Each structure stands twice: as structure tokens, then as C-alpha cells.
Amino acid sequence: MGANITRWRRIAVALLAAGLIPGLISGCSTASEKSPTADRGNSATTPAPGGGSHAEAEGDGAGSGGGGAGSGAASAAAFRKWGIEPLAAPPAPPKTKPVTLRANGDVPVISDIPVKDKVVFITVDDGAEKDPKFVTMMEELKIPFSMFLTDSAVNGNYGYFQRLRQQGNGIHNHTLTHPNLRALGAAAQKREICGQQDKLKARYGTAPRLFRPPYGNWNEATRAAVKACGAQAIVLWRESMQIKNMQYQRADQKLHPGDIILAHFRGPSELKGTTMTEMTANMLRHIQEQGFTVARLEDYL
Picture (cartoon, rainbow, N blue to C red):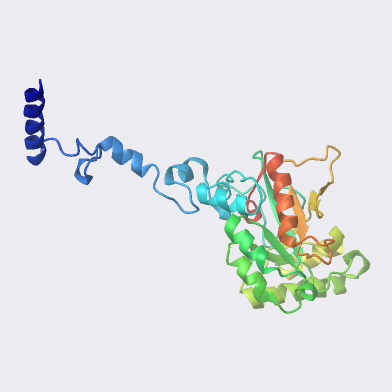
């Protein structure tokens, strides 16, 4: 029996040396031995931008329209870092935008976008708080949002918002000094809106398409001024984020597909000791817990 085992060992060694059974002893195949099945398996998990795979990105639109939420292990780790459960990846932007804006057309007033997907849109107003950790947070989470900036709140520090703009986030008009536009005449409203429109175009190279009236207060003179100043829509909201809780306009007190959410660039002095990143994390938890994710507003109008 022992002689037979020795004989077969000698044969195996000879075959291995001849290259007829490569990798048998180690259990690993050589690079030249990858089968077509193995190649397909590797290509299906080739990393795609955002930390997911090309297969994932092609299948669910992960990372489309500036939103990388839910796109793989790296994204999940980023959410965990900020104490948030990962949001699902947003759907691919619609080929036809649900809301059509025209340069010389009527100015619509928008509080939500007509969609069926469980997506919402985050907007952040004013510009007083300039927390560098918020820039880091949104870069790591890749959550899209739109900014509506007031010149008096920005207070000359437009460079901070350029860093957020470079992440793919839109910058829009929120007047020069944040007045109640209903209390102003037509000429004064036009100065507020056109003045900020000009400042933002000079600073960032493009004129904003969207305008948000302070406090959500507007009238027909506002609409006429928005059109005259070159913006194309008045954007309001359905929910507003406070410190920990969200305020809802609807009686059912919950998010609906296409809702626009209002938040602000605010810090501990206005948030009772809460930082802007903590407020943002609370907002994202409300969105995630209701089964929604975040899409880029500019992809829908």
C-alpha cells in the first residue's frame, strides 16, 4: 500500500512539473487560467464611481444627477461615519423634465415636483453659517442639494459656497437683504431680485434660473420682477427642517414623492447648540426612515 502511494506521489509531481495540472496543490488558478465565467464575475464587480460596481450603477442609476447615496461599501461607510443609515441611490434623472421652464414664459410657483418615485429635494437658504464640516459631510455623502443665497447673509464670503457648487450643487437667488417682498413696491422688489441675480452671475459665471422669496412671501409684482430679472421659477417648499424635527404643510404629516424641503445655513447660535451637520443628519434620518432618497432639483426642472 505504501509503495503505491509513493508511486502516485512521484507521478503527480512529474505531471505538475510538466505543467499538466498547474495549481492543483495550492488550490489557486494561475492568471492564464481564468475561465470565461470567472472573467464575467470579475467584470460585474469592477468598481464604478461612487464606490459601487458598474453593474450596480447600470442597474439602478446609482450616482446619477449628482446623488451618490447608497452607491456601495464606501458610501455606506460614509453614512455610518455621520451616524446615518445609508439612503438608497436616486433614480436616473428623467429624460423629460416634469417641469418645463422657459426663458420668456410665465413664471411658475413650485412647492413640489410631479413624480412617482420616492425622491425629495433638499434646498438650503440664506448663507449665514459657513461650517467647513458641512462641506466635508456633503462631499462624503454625495447628497445633492440646492442653495438659495442672500447677499447680506453671505456677507462677502461667496468662496465658501463655491466649494459646495464644485460638488455639483446649484446656487440660486434669495434676494439681496431678505425683505418681506409683499411689503415692497414693484421697483424695490426688482432691485432686490435683480441685484442678487447680478451678484451671483458675476461671482459664479452663470445667472440663477430659480428664485425663492424670503419667508415664502410673494405677489404678482414678485413674479413680474423674477421674469424681468431673468429667473424662470419661484421655488417654495412643502417641509421645513428645524433642529431635530421636520415641519409638514400637509395634514398627514409625512413626505410625499417630489416634495421640496427647506433648510437653512445655520449654526449653534441659531440651533440651540446644535451644529449644521447634526441638523443635516437629523433631516436625512427623517428622509431615510420614511423610505425616501434625495435627488437633484435641477435635474427635474
